[in-house]
Each structure stands twice: as structure tokens, then as C-alpha cells.
Length: 245
Image 1 (cartoon, rainbow, N blue to C red):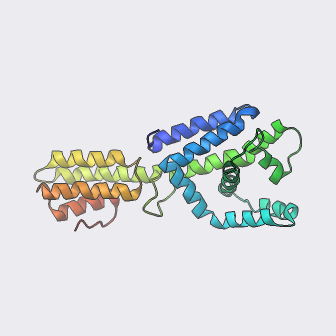
Image 2: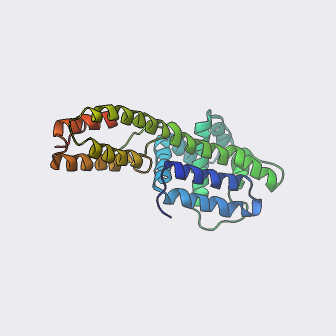
Image 3: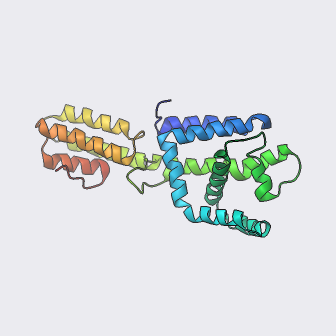
């Protein structure tokens, strides 16, 4: 499968999530495993999972410590009580599902047993499945959606969230008025910057910035625009002082 942009991968995750929510218990293990394979194969979702690991590193270390404890029953209950927000619950859920995913040999109730391991689920497997969805799957999906919707870039390999894309699209509106004031080369600059805008939902910050620099350097070499004007327009787009030379 080709690399999907933010809108495409959001739609795809929604489809996977819906399929898993209503899956028969006998098929749940296969569907979740396929879903995680998809998440790791796609650059945007894979980087999002890396960010969860980075942002919730302390939580994960504590989780691992609890699982190794000789008094796990007591410490597990205390640890669960520290999951004070839906986001923390989602990160915890990701780490637990990930551990299961990385085990090669799986069986029908493989993932839903997390409900028993951490929440002492009673009843039959169908009730375990419902608890698994409530405490693990749904919070995890919500956390991914939050990163897609409103997270802020911390590293150059991060991808833009919808909130950041919306701000940059506003920057492009301001760019239009600047370009219209130039004496010549307006149509070429409009076309080149439109291409830059179209790429934002599919590239990380580093790659997107490199394309911006390459396009403006080409226009400088073609004497369509001066270095000073190019750097000014780039600042309007990105909000950053990016030097071309």
C-alpha cells in the first residue's frame, strides 16, 4: 500500500476501528493484528506510535516495573488508579496491546485477556471483550485521534496535526496578498506554493521544509524571485526564519 496522507489514514483507521468494534470474538485477534500491522507500515501512524512511546515513557517504565513485581496484584490495582485521564489510559492501552502484538503465537482470546489481567474481569469471554474495548481499544483510538487532531510538532520528523495544518493554510492566505504585490513571476510563484500547500498533509516537517527550500532555490536560480523575498515568503508560510544560503 502507498503512503497515505493525514485525511486518508484517518479514514482508514476509522474503518479498521469500526470493524474491530463489531467483530465477532473469534475474529478479533486477527483483526487487531492486521490493524497494528497497518499502523506500523504507514509513516504517519508509525511516527504517532513512536511519539506515544516518547511522551509516555515514564508511564511505560512504571507499567513494566509493575508487571515484574512479586506483589503484582496489589501494585496493579494501585497502578490502575493512577490512570487519571483518558489520554493516559490510551497510552497504557497502547503499550499493553503492543506487547501482545509482538508475541508471535496468538490465540482467539489473546487480546481480550488484558481485561482479566488488569481489571480482574469476571463472567464469560464476551464480557471480557466488552471490557477490553472500554479500557483498552477505545482509549487507544481516541489518543491516536488526538495526535492527528491537535498535537504540536516537537521534532523535525513529526507530522503536522489538523490544527497545525489549519494554521499553515491561513498562512497561505496571507501569502497570496504578498505574492500579488510582486512585480513579476506571480503565476509561477502561485503554482509552486500551491504544490507546497498540497503536500503538507502527507509529509513530516523535515521533508516538507526541504521541498519548500528546493522550490524557492529553483525560483531564485531562475531569477523569478530574489533571495530576500524568497526568505520573507517562506517565513509567511512556516512562521520560521529559514535561511536559503
